[in-house]
Image (cartoon, rainbow, N blue to C red; front, side):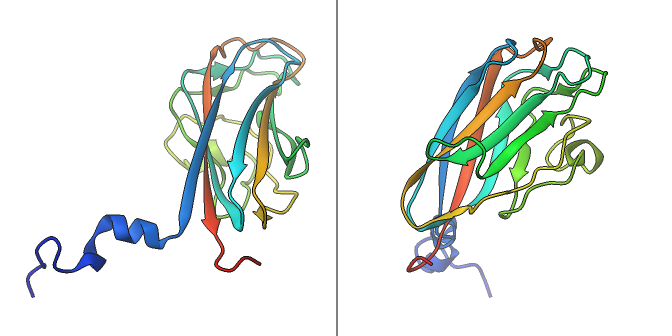
Amino acid sequence: MANPMYGQNRADNLVDKVKSLNQTAVSGSIHLAVTHTTNYDIAITQPARTYLKDLILVNGGDIVTNGSSGNDLDMSMGAATSYTDLMAATALLDDGGSAVTWTANVPLYIIQDAHGQAANLFATTGVGPKGGPATTEAIVVAGALYSSASRTINIRFTPLTGDMTTATTAISALCIFQHVPNGV
C-alpha cells in the first residue's frame, strides 16, 4: 500500500509520535573556568510527576586536567539545596597522574534510561561519539529520580586540588524528564 499523503493519517506525523512519548526536555549551562576548589552549578527545574530519564552533558571546548594525581573534575547532583542526594561527588575526569581530556562537543550520557554508567564507559564503549574522558569513576544514582512535585535539580562541577590545564568553556546539561500518568 502506498504511503498516505500528509494529513490523511495523523498517526504517521513525527511530531505526534514525539508528543506521545510524554517527555519534557529542559536544559541549562554554566561557564566552567580553570580555577580549582570552585563550584560551578547548573539549576534545572524538574516538572511535577516526572522522573529524570536522561542527563546528557556537552562541552563547548576541550576540558583537560593538569596531569597531577587527584586533580579530577568532579560532578555531583542533588535536589533543592543539596548537591549530593541524587549523585555523590564523582570524578567525571579522573586524573590518576596523567592529564585527562574531554574533547569539545562530545556528549556524555551521564544518566541513560534512569541508570548511571560504569567506570570508564565513555572511552571504552563509545557511549556517544568518541572523545569522552579516558578515565571516569562509576556514575551511581543515589537518590530518587522521580518527583511528585516540581523541584530544582542542582548539577555541580568542581575541579579538585589544582587548576585545570584547559577548561574556560561552557558545559550544557540536557535533562529528559518522563511524565508518569496520574503520578506515582
